[in-house]
Length: 389
Image (cartoon, rainbow, N blue to C red; front, top):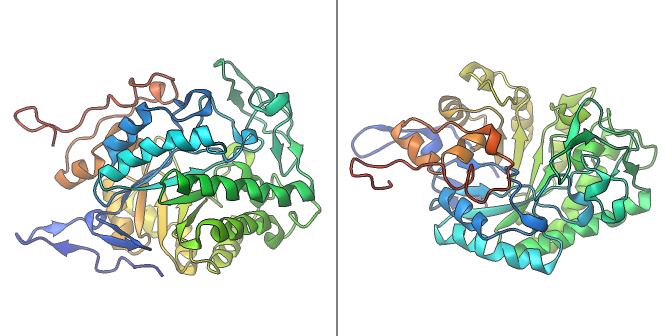
């Protein structure tokens, strides 16, 4: 059950108020020392789809005692790749490569979740085994955008191939195996990426899902594949180690719904049947450039989902420090997930604590393959003597 945030603000011994974001939270078996969560962020630095040693530096820099990190989207099988140098976890080599990275986070006292992310139709022949068509719920391609090939060239999305009913049923096993590999690598749990136009979102949203079998049509049918996967993965590693990310109000990559609120409510109420670690919801005003205001957090369409969900509820999408604190203190979230701010500020919780200036993220270096530039070279706070604090 959720540890609601009413009364989350505390006082230090000196009488100064502690920010709600910096108050502790009991997340299932994990005691969080603060509620500032690092978002899953594609960084395109896992050469040949195998995590690299420099990722241990990157995640280790951002780990804190009792802090939660969600790793970048990691493919559960070879068909799930849609970005250059994206990591996977479907084979032993990848699982072994993740182990020292997970250890780096644990050595700092952090909690590390592996996001299992399949891109579905957000892919290209060049990423697919034997040059096959990407797989999805549909044969309809993404329109109005382009995809980056491994060479860096930008091209139109090709038509995907709709999985058969039997293939959808069998696909669940790939997520089950990937979840087991994640636990074997040392991760504390997994998050299923069912948001932002990726694979599961292509089943959830009626603008994409045009199926006529048991995985298409009604809310129940469109949610069925995700629910069956949660069930299988929970049986494999324990429901308390499974989390889910959703974005019912998003229209990313053409995945929108004609009734997003009721889709979200149906899904949330279905998730109440599981003892999940948390539900990670992306706010409808998700923006790379315009942070939300405190008023937007109190009027968010996510509020009905928060009220309907019985477990721990995380929010993400355009939150700054002020609005994040408001989300916690108002009870609209149990934790706030930060992406770009955490990317550019490896010591983000410390900066929030001290109300320090923030490094600005450099979008031009987000997805380059360099193991240092734009990756592990963002500066930490330093004291008057130049010592990292």
